[in-house]
Length: 303
Image (cartoon, rainbow, N blue to C red; front, top):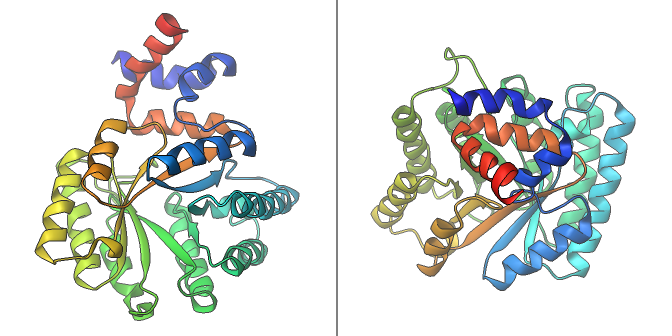
């Protein structure tokens, strides 16, 4: 109950206080901050995917600004020779305002990344966004196969069928590339699994289908039972280590992350940065209210 109370109160606290907790999970506010973290992770044999925070915009001029910022980010990351790619949220580019404008904005970003032989991940957002984001991914994949991927959320009851429905795009030369995560948005039980074991069971079901079909799954989890389940499936299907990767969020479960890297598996860390870090931080807390204990320590012990 205390953790849930803190979860509700955190958005009302001064941002300077919240930052004491959040800075463990956010690279910083500037591209310089993000570049520093990316180099540090690369030095640990960890790839990165970089994300500029600021989704659910309300004006199309914000979409243009975000697009231009991403084009600059790509130039900087490539110049720095960082081993990594790019993640973005379509609502940052006007998905809920004008889908065609959103598509044009994101297409320009994907084209820029593809010109360097690089890759862009389209993040999945809440349930109102699922269909338009799959449509967006299909359009981008048709033009840029091998340079664009999608996030899928195992707690959504529709996800297994969504994966199957996209199998028509699969090409062994450019396999479908999906980041599979549990899911973070608060959804109604009619469309989303709610119980821990139920979500985990469907996560592994989705992952097994991807592996069995020769897709390239990005196993995004901090849950050791899921990591162990993934190891078992990789062994079952004799999947080469260059045909999948593990992914984690910056600042989360570093010990588990290191253990995976030490076993020789590819690891990519999601590195978020930007001035719009507050919403990201509060969503992380809603996903895992147990983090409230760490917030208390950060605010009143270390802070």
